[in-house]
Every structure is written in C-alpha cells, then in structure tokens.
Amino acid sequence: MKKHLLVLLFATMLLAAGQNASAQLANGCIAPNFIANDINGNPWNLYSILSQGKTVFIDISATWCYPCWVYHNSGNLENLYNTYGPPGTNEVMVFYIEGDANTSTACLYGPAGPCASSTSTQGDWVTGTPYPIIDNASIANSYQITYFPSIFMITPDKICRENSQITTAQHYAAMQQYSFPAIATADAGVSWGCSMNQNVSGCSGASMTVRLFNYSTSPLTSATIEVSVNSVVQQTIPWTGNLATYAYATVNITGVTGSVGPNTADITVTGANGGADTRAANNSTSIPFTIYANAGGPAVTEAFPTATFPPSGWTLSNGGSPYTWDYSSVGSSNPGSAIMDFYEATAGDMDVLSLPPMNFTGYSAATLTFDRSHQQYGSGNVDNLKIKVSTNCGASWATPYNKSSSQNLATGLTSVLGYSPANTPWVPSLSTDWASDNVNLNSYLGNGVVIIKFEANSGYGNNLYIDNVNVNLITSTGDIVTVPVHFELYPNPATNSASVSLQLNRTSDVTVNVVNALGQVVQSTLNPNLSAAEHTFTINTRNLSPGVYNVNIISSEGVTSRKLIKE
Image (cartoon, rainbow, N blue to C red; front, side, top):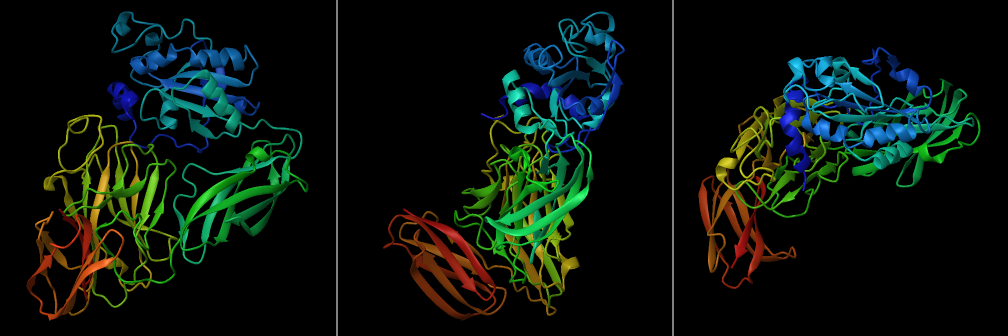
C-alpha cells in the first residue's frame, strides 16, 4: 500500500518542508551547480565532475532525521561509491549533503555536547563513510527539497532525477538508462522535462519544445529531427549550430497537428553532423498534446451519470503516472462524479480534464458552478486545483480559480494527518463532505471558442472529487439558457414507481426518458408546453427488470441525468 514509507518519514519530512514552500526540483530539470568544500576542506565543483562524464549522486539529509540515518546505514550509497566510484570503475561520484541550516557540523560526528540528543543527531555520520560530506544548506535550498532524505541522480548532461531510497543495483540501473557518456562518433539526443511541454494544446496545431544534446566528444554542428504523429512523419527539421560536449540547444517545434482529443508526438533524431547518428538509445522522446475543436459549442452541463469517462467531448491529459482523473460512483447529490487520484499520483504530476470548447458570444453574463470534495492527507501533502480558461485555443491561459488543500480546497473533516481512519483514500459519504463553487466567467464573454480545464497538481495527498459541472450563460433579458433542469428522483431505489420533481426556469417541452444499461430507451414521456414552475411526474417501474437505469430530463434548457435503481 502507498504512503506506508511516507508515514514514517513525515515526522522528519515536515520540518524540512517548512524551509521551502516550492515543489521538489522536478525530474528533467537542469541541476543547479554547487561549488563547496567538504568537512575536510577539500573543494568540489559539481559541473566539473559532470564534464568528466561521471554521474553524480547526492544524498541531501539532516543529522536528526531517522529515515535518513536508516538509509545512510543501509550501505547502498557506500557500495555504489566503492564499486562504481573512484575506488572502483570511476563512473560515479557520491556526496552526502547536510541540508539543515539549523544543525552544526559537530552533529555530523555524533551525540556529544550540544548534539547530545537525537533531536540534534542520530549518530556518527562520518566514521565509515567513504565519500565526501558537505555541510551546506544552500545546496538543499537550490534543489528545492521538501523532505529529508532527498536523493538525486545527476547525469553528465546536467539533467537531474530523483532516485529515492533504492538499492545500489537500482541506482546503477537508473544510471545506465539515463546516462550517456560522450563517444567519439556523432551522437545527438533529444529529451524534455521540468516545466517544458506542460499540457501542450491548440486548435489548428500545437507547439512544443525539446532539448537537443551533444553526446559526442566532438562539437555538434548539425542534426536532423523528425516529428511524427500516429507513425506519420509530419515535419523534418534541420538544425545547425555549434554545441560542445554535453551542451544543449532548445528546439521549438510548431504546427504539430492531430485529431481532436489527446495525441502523442514522437520526436526523433535521424542524423548528426551530416551523417547517421551512432547511438539510438537517446534519439527519441514523446510529447503528449491535445487538439481542441476550432469551434465553440453549447454550454456544458455534466453530472457524470455514467461510467463513460471522460464524458463525450471532454479531453484528459495524464501527467505521467498511471493515476489520474477517472470516474467514481460516488456523487454529490446523485451517484457519479469525476475523481482525481491524488492519493496515488506522484507528487508533481499535473493532470488536466478539459471541457468541450464553448461559444460565449451573445450573452451578458457567464458563470461556472460545480461541487467538490477533498480531504488533505497531511500538512506536507499539498494538492492543488486550478481552473484555467483560454480564448485562443490554448496558446495562453487565465486562472480564475486556484485552491490548495492546505488553504480552502479541502472539505469535511480536517486534522494534522488527514481524517480518521488515517492512511486511507478519501471517499465522501455525507452531504457535508461536499462544497459548491461559483466561478465568474464574465471576462471571457464575446469569444467564440472558450476552453475551460480543471488542472490538478498532485502533492501525493488525498482524493479530489468534482460533480455537477455547469457553465451558465445568461442573455441580456436575464434568461439562463444553459442551466440544466434540476430534478429530484424518489424513492431511489424504487419498486413500483418513482417520482420526478423538477423546476422549470421558462416554458418548455419536457421529455422524460428511462434508459437501461444497454443505452436503450425503455420508457419515454413527452410533456408539451410546460410553464415555468415546479412539476411532478410519476415513472412506472413495476415492469422494469431489477438493475440500474438513467432517467434523462430533456428540455430547452438542456439535458440532465440521474441514476435510478430498480429493486
């Protein structure tokens, strides 16, 4: 089960998190350089070591941190250094970084004097440690750590990845996968990461960027890059320049097309320095992107009545881990909602759920309403939900809504380490577990293509649910033209009959459809020319087979669905 290790770590982690409110340095970022002396006075320069083709591992810990102490004494980094570092094959370098500015160098040598208690040090960190120890909290700050220990692997191209507390063999396997020591023949590689290519989108086409690296001992002066979508080459890009060994250039790619919805662009180096590229392992990378319809449709109303996900016309962009937005049978007023699995999603993952494009022309007011339910897991696990709006097909986004679990996103019970029972995913069960939000969209009136997206940013916390998503457009006469008909369905489950009670905002024909699990309409009743008032109908369920049905209310105001269970 997830979080078991983290529960152990939180007692120490959260103190570290208080030092820095920003997110941990993401995989794929360029590692900050450090120039510092170790506790024996020896000088070290990270970039100088990387330029020798070595991969560097840094363990950023604190002397008082018990999980740090356990991992330090596991021998995994010691074995890595002795086997593959200077005493062995000399492929890697390892550093221990004391990352807490509030502890003194004396605490590295064990409990004595001002460091006598375990609140200052867990023991003697120096004796038996073959690799350099650097007491420098500014290094920890530059890597934006949010917990101790944080263990990073930095390859010769200066790309940083977090390895976590893994074995010697796993560290070395990760190095073999991502490290490309320079070779004599022409070798160019492409990659992306960090804040690059987050939720790439467009209507007629999308733009993205990659880093082009030189992994040769000779300068890279030319390269050929192919861009493919669905195995069809769309572009061949010639690049010229002058890159030294391990240097990179940013290549901007525009006009990448695809079908409406999610797509993937495959970027591949096919040539270097006028000839073939001689190492295929670093030649390719893939970038997900979304193409939106280049025309706004009607306003959206969605109560997630069925398990089909994402709903028709919606698009989902997965942030990387397999845990993302999905359907949940739990709902606010009726079964069904969208769930963001923050409980399992890797910290730093950004997952996006986008509504179909809408037409905001001809209206005097616009709002977005929805219900949400969320519970913070712990004070160190800050999940975040943003609502972003674009009127130029995703070229730029405004953010009219931004809430975090540590502020005002959470609903229901709260405590330091989540709700009871601890260490379990959040599932709302009471009406008080839900809250409603209203977002003003008037700034986007007059635009023919308005795209709204729910952007979820994981803090490896706890689940978020959204339900009853409605975009409400109001005419100059005050008519609300896109609010779905609100109705109650009772009793539910039903045996012989069920009642539908609804409120119409204006005169309209109303059709009541009962749909079975196969999508077949098994009952349909047309109620013509109903006035703007409250109305009640009866559905005869006596002859329906036991099971789950959808009751659809269709009027000039839209379509609303509720689940009905026949016993």
